[in-house]
Image 1 (cartoon, rainbow, N blue to C red):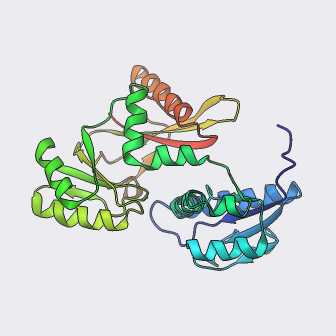
Image 2: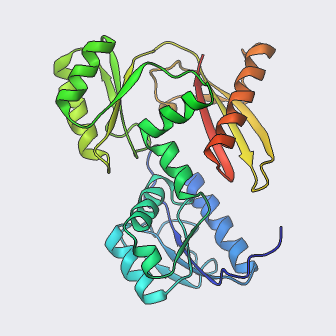
Image 3: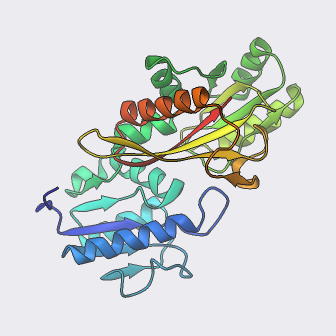
Length: 287
């Protein structure tokens, strides 16, 4: 692929502190990206709130800012450094959220900054629970019975329709933050209130709980020409109901029949294609 001549200076958003769902792999991937950008002659500006990372090595970036990963901090850096591009997809959930906020507020357009890497539309359709559900239904992939809520009372009404237990999944969060399983209305009100507080768009998905099902993951890649491939399959030692971040994961999956493997592999490739993601994508299935 020819080198893009329009990219001269890139602001890279780091992943911040290491937590479940946003661990050291983001730091490693970000460090590799900084190295590749520098080798290509691109000026690299890095913002990370965690100094104990590989990314903050002075050999990997031309300018390093140890600043809070907030909208205001990033705006100040953009105004000072005047990058032409912003790479947010290597900063984990924090990076994606900040990139979306800056793009949707019009700030990036105002200062002539392009969002590179994962496209805004792909981020929205993967992160917004309602859009993701609609996308899966569009390509005929089965989803658990669920509905979107923006208030605690809406959560209660949906749970009564679906039947307890239900699981609360806040939008634009990672690592299970703000979510949980509710077995009755009292638990649901507590969990959904917390989930709505933590979701940047004040949105949660109330989903029928399917604890005990087998949890399978596929890691897939796609390029800008639409070519797709499977990196590997993975099987969680613990069933659905135990968060992946707390579970042992084995690669490749060991207990799938060939029929199930091919079905899930095809589904994962259809999902990354429909979302339009260029790069890596992790697809999780309940079987």
